[in-house]
Image 1 (cartoon, one colour):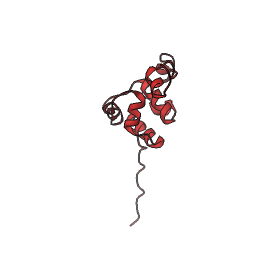
Image 2: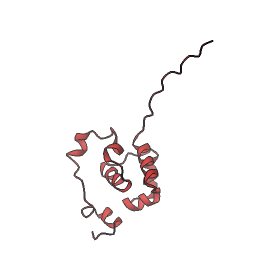
Image 3: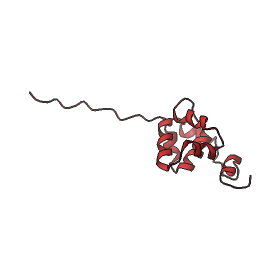
Image 4: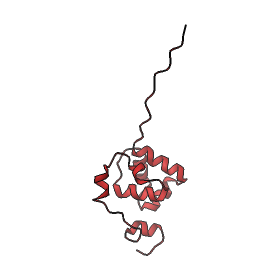
Length: 107
């Protein structure tokens, strides 16, 4: 009897929560450390990385900065390029009080 080739499997689909977890792991940043960096509770980070709540564009930008992954990869197709590139300016740490505090900069 001849063996039938296995049917092709679909590529895994990663949602924003999956990519957020992968970014944390790659950067070796723990959830509590990220919560402290963002100025949010550990529960908020848990809700994002478990897919219970969608993070804001600003949160994803800061997440990408802290973990060193591209924002475009992290956001995936959640935010079409038009939606985040024109309406949400990149905030520098000195303009963002939570990030400035996390970096030890004067707010």
